[in-house]
Image 1 (cartoon, helix red, strand yellow):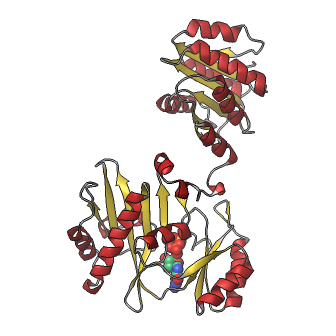
Image 2 (image 1 turned 90 degrees about the vertical axis):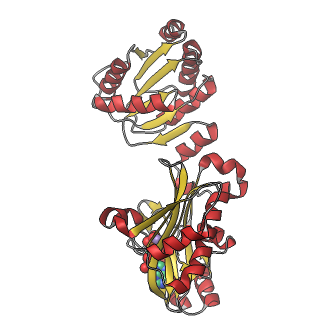
Length: 383
Ligand code: GDP
Ligand code: MN
């Protein structure tokens, strides 16, 4: 789950990271009021969950409260990379002398958090990694020991930071690390961390991504979820306990197991189709879950065929078959359905499907199932 800039910065501030004074606004009038309270030049920043807002016209300076209102009005009317701007952050403008990058992610290859710093702040770190990788300094942090002073000093030195700012940098780096750990985040980033004209460090931008699997420990953070982050379908899936990611293809896939779902998508693609979704219905075979999953798949108007790929292990194919029939009764799909059930009780499962009023196209191997689903989606195979 992604957090907005203002949410991330407020969390960082709780850990002692200096951030500009400011507040969020949802209307031009509110933005004007915030600018009036702050006084002087402000920066009006769109709060959308994508990067590169500056280039998209979503960040503007304003020199008076009236100008802040006008700028906010324009930004609030924008759509940035497909996302509507519903809020702006009005911050006291920073006098920027230098832009630094400071961030933490999990390095899965090493099984540790890695803190990264770069003197090339302000631009996306992926871009720095591509064109100038030696400008990024990294330290791995042992989670049992935590981030140590020698590590932050090494980073500060590595990016050529003014030694006078080392103490402040150390505090900010430790604060960011604590925020990352205590929020169960998978990413915490300040880009840019600026050196101001007055010679202080200030976190001008903030970004956090929280690990969904840790959210149950943070009900207060879970409440911050932005409805625009996920489609209504993805939301319903999450609430039903299904792993669902909508894609833009034409073949809806219903699969039990994440690895099998990936393999199903690969083979569908191999035979010239394109998957409409990733969907793992998980173990067990409760009919209501299968029904919810099918309803979600069919709610996507791009879906031209549905492929059920069920591997019965602990899950029994006859139970899944019953689930599919219950779902069909409830959802009444208008597109061809291809079912492949193999494993425990597969014979019984196929018999249940064959006895139903719905004509399901059946297949034994995954290759056969995928080819039939592709043909069905292309109208070359009638149900
Ligand atoms: P992003 O483009 O979505 O990453 O948004 P940022 O908050 O990082 O802002 C992008 C850029 O706008 C920064 O790198 C700065 O160069 C500039 N910027 C942001 N805030 C201020 C500010 O308060 N004063 C000035 N002068 N520039 C700012
Ligand atoms: Mn940024």
